[in-house]
Image 1 (cartoon, protein in one colour):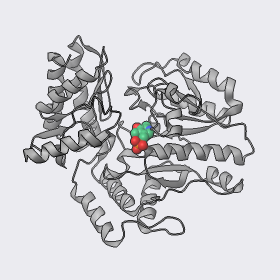
Image 2 (cartoon, rainbow, N blue to C red):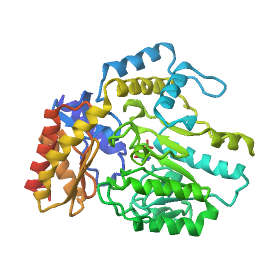
Image 3 (cartoon, rainbow, N blue to C red):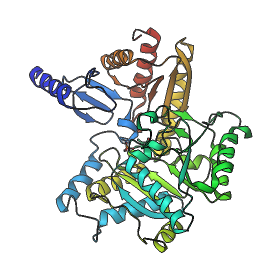
Image 4 (cartoon, helix red, strand yellow):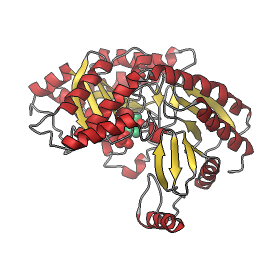
Length: 434
Ligand SMILES: *Cc1c(COP(=O)(O)O)cnc(C)c1O
């Protein structure tokens, strides 16, 4: 077994890229043998309680019988057929379920490959919409600083310009408009001046603005930041006032993670286009979805060239649609609201004590997301060390920058979550990773 583990690690180190890594100074990676429920089992049989849901996705945990069954049943009839000129029940059934969950006005569904591609598709839709209306000068986008919208070029163009290293791609990456990140946090009292930066940006640029793209209420990978829902209401109003579309990137916030089914529900607003991904398939398969209003679809189809110009090879993949369908069934059947509320309460109670630590700047919790922000960013060395300490203590928590956070599967038990928060407190209080 030691041989097998060595072989995995050696080959990986020699030939595989990991997300955002250097091949010269690779950080350690841990070989996984299997994953069940909220447990990740390493090749050496060590069990880790999962605090990450594999980046927001595995909301029902791993190796779920119902989801497995959905994939297996589908596999028995077809794993894939092209979506050009063909359709199938899994795509239709998933669409019906999405319409049940989404606001009534969002009813034109485009299936695609991943979150980043969903963002690309949404931005192309917005541009084609304006083009069809004859407003060809409206082709720029605006967003707020601190966001994350994926790693493809247009997704990157609305990521935070500093985190996203925009200077690297200067001259090729489109240069869009950034309003200040809202200062009022989710729990602050709203102050109107928090909208001033976006207000000015829109007033000065509305003639060339096609859409505002943002993550509603929770900025995820860009900083795990929770802003005031009133900000979203203001964005909705100003978009309506100046004929700008609102694209809600709910790839991270969708399907209950923030305590509401969708992030926009915190402000009771409806975007013109919504992007979904991550938890859509319960973490089983890569899939993105863009849902727009009928009006946008109509306008695009009435204009030139009269079709929406996108069509991925694996569009509407039946395996992905089937498992997404099953995941949405589980979401509703298993009372996600009760589960997320319970996690929120427990995280709030148990993470509070991290505030005593001198290394900690702040603690925040919303829905099934618990964040401890440190005063200093972790270096890549301290990141490797803290990761190893977490693994030694039997938990899977992967910090980045100043942020040590938990985003567990909704099915996590009270004692498993307690273990995650206890270990987090212990490792941070010992401070041996510095
Ligand atoms: C993860 C994420 C994306 C990108 O999704 P991928 O599936 O990684 O391409 C886009 N937007 C948000 C808000 C995300 O959290």
